[in-house]
Length: 127
Image (cartoon, rainbow, N blue to C red):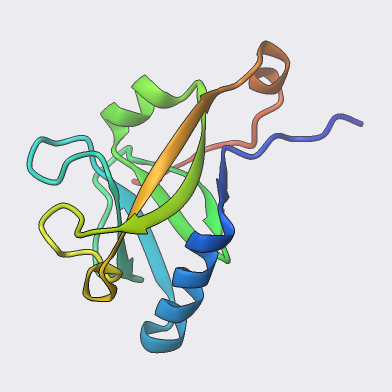
């Protein structure tokens, strides 16, 4: 039996901030846009606070919270593993829930090996 490979993980630092946000807001969601104005940093919202566009990709969950990617950005990055991290600073536009904490989420990428790519978890698409 082959093991499916996750497209997404999170650092301990990111999980600490997510836990803090969960206590304050409850269920969360992440969205990583590909546009110029929001940049390509992931943003964190209360669940339902942002609606993915048709055919955007949900690449996995972190602590049960969905992580969505802009459909065009996903086509570019579909060969990469995403590791959610957090750093000091203010993210794009200040709309993300971690902004008042003086933090911003960011993603580290690495390419999948050919073997990993053949065994990836499926992607969910918005309708």
